[in-house]
Each structure stands twice: as C-alpha cells, then as structure tokens.
Image (cartoon, rainbow, N blue to C red; front, side, top):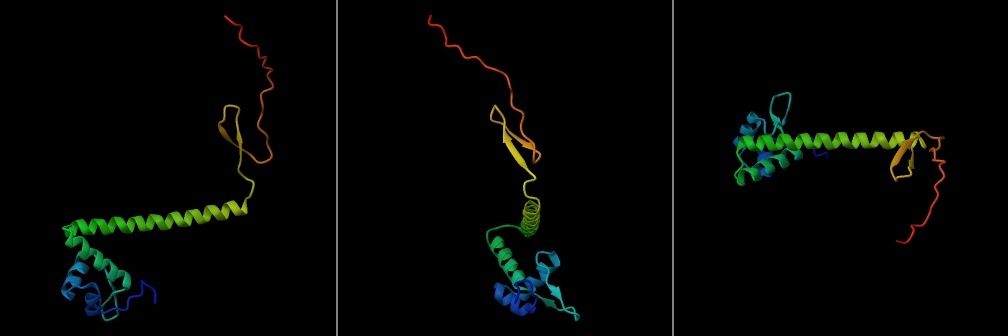
Length: 138
C-alpha cells in the first residue's frame, strides 16, 4: 500500500491521528488536510493525510494558530515541490552529461583563473620573453 492511497474512513483516520472526527471535518473545511472523496462523497484519508493531521496537532499544541499552521503546511508543500523539481533537473543534467561527454572543457589561465573552452581547442599562451635579473645590493 502506498502512503498516498486513500483507504481510511474518517473515524479510523481520527483514531490514528488521535483526534475527534469533527476536528477532521473542520480541518477539511479550512483546507489544512483535504481527504479524497468516494463517489458517495464520503471522506477517505491516506497515511500521508494522517501524518499531516498529526503535524497539525503537534503545531497546535505548540501554540501555533490555525492560520499559522496553514501557512507552514503550504510552505512545506512548496519546498517538497521544489525538491522534486530539483531532483528532476539533476537527473536531466546527469543524463545530458552522459549523452554528451567531452562537451565542456576547462583550462587554467596564467593567473590561475578557470576558463571554459570548446572541445578540441587549446588555450593561447603568451609567447613573451621574460628576462630575470637579480636585484642589485644597496
């Protein structure tokens, strides 16, 4: 069973979360936890919903207002979405790097700076002649 599978009726979800079913109905109305609905319009909760209900209860016990809890949950969802997108982009980048080996070449300049170059090219080196002379004693 997947954590997102909506299988729990409201009484079971309330028991798992340690809450009264009426509290779950209120949280649904406020948009804190939105369970799935059956064709008959009854609520079905997933394990993820139950975990979220527990988090709401924990934040409430710490004195966070319902609006504060809503905002925290909203931000956590946003972060989860961003992390998911980051994983997608990292995967796409890794695939691209595997499919195009040798496309990015770097070289160190005379002053130690790193420069990006096209594959198959060389960095131009200075052909100046430098003469070293010791300092004369004073």
